[in-house]
Image 1 (spheres, one colour):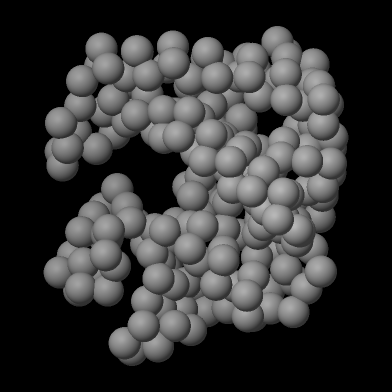
Image 2 (cartoon, rainbow, N blue to C red; image 1 turned 90 degrees about the horizontal axis):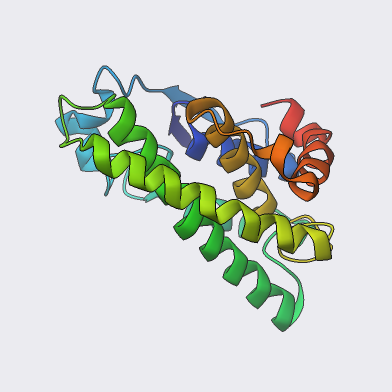
Length: 206
C-alpha cells in the first residue's frame, strides 16, 4: 500500500491528521513535486482519477483518490471507537452536513481565492485575479457562520471531535497563512476551538 502525497498541502494535512488519530504510522509514502508537475505525468494520470494528491494505491489494480474517500477507507479497515464520522443516525448526519458546509463554503472557496490570486499554477490553468478577490470575500463571509456554530458546540458538528474539525482546522490555518486573514484574532469561539484542536497529538505531529 502506497500513499502519494505532498505533505504540506491542505488536503494531505487533513488526511495525515486523520491517520494520526487512528494511529496509522507504517504506511509507505511517495512524495510528489506538484509544482514540478509530478502529478501531471502520464503514469500518474493512469493511477489517479483526478491527477491530484493524496492518492492511495492499495494494490496494482486498486487506487483511491479524494481525501475523504481515503479517510473513510482507513476508518473502515482500522478497528477504533473514535467515531470520526459520527455515531448514531443523527450525529452521522450532522457530521456529513457540516463537513459539506465547511468544504463547499470554506475549503473550495479558499482554494479558488489562493490559486487565482497567487496564480501559482498559471502555466497549467486559467487564473483570474478578480475571481480570486471575489472568492476571498466569500470566504471571509463564511467565518461568522463557523464562529456562531462554535459558540453553541465544543466542536463543529457536535460536542465530539470529528473529521469536520480536522477539515475546518486545516482551513483556518491555510486561510490565515496563505490569504493573510486574521481569523482567530477576530473570532473568539474559533480561537478557543483552534487552540483546543492544536493541542491534539495528531495535529502536533503533522
